[in-house]
Image 1 (cartoon, rainbow, N blue to C red):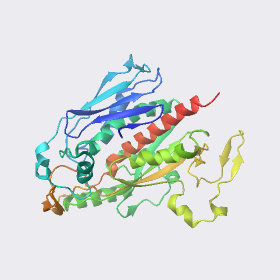
Image 2: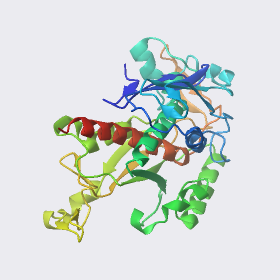
Image 3: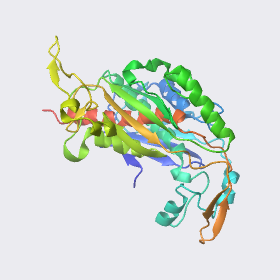
Image 4: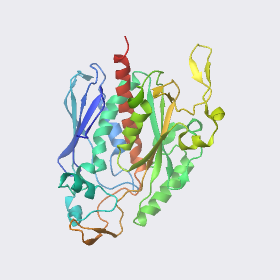
Length: 359
């Protein structure tokens, strides 16, 4: 219930923030796909905590174990199971909120739904769960790479500090050269300093992760309810702390006239169909048109701050929630590989669905 995603390339994640571990089961991955342990580990390392002083100082190696579905470096076509053990839980850091509802957390809603909740780091609602998605996303990326499809995300905004350049004017190879994961190095340093100052004040700040997908041919996606952009939106909005999703021209498109917004078709010298502009974001009618797919994902400020906040306890009494524990002052630097992973999972599923729909 709510822990699975996909129609053909399907994943199910399990585990809690302070349990023994977290993991994922992948079904539907074709046999014979290269299972690159080093690449999967490198993707998990990009997401793991403790990367710099502007991320949570929880120390997790995030090393994964393969339990099934892989033989001699290739997928077997059977379910792939991967486990990531938790090593640095400090459950005592959360004992003070066992009976309190933290502002903007899932404490109250989980209690309302289940009648019980794991208060240790948020349990199942913790962003720790996303490590399992990144592991599965790395497998999906490998499948997509065989089809010459690449997924690249980067931080484009922190608070009010926003990159004004479009992705085509950026060198995305620079994304991984700094702790913020912003490809504009001058802006990256400014963002780092700002996040660090927010951290020192005991507060948090939100931001935006932009993503570009190249190499998707025309024809991926489904009509009506399973539109490609709708599934991308669902995938992104399933990530912890996400508050917004827009693709293509997004909300800015409402300021244009139809004559300005329409993407005119033309045929290039090799006979390939393209559009002269790409306000559609590579998707029309819910189906890819062969152009770059691009979108933005908005993340709220992290809910846990190192300041006392007024709330209530489970009996309805006023309570002061103390800011304790180890938390990110800004989630977007570590969210970059999560956004890429979820995009890859969506595309891997649509790639296989497109294959199965052809005569």
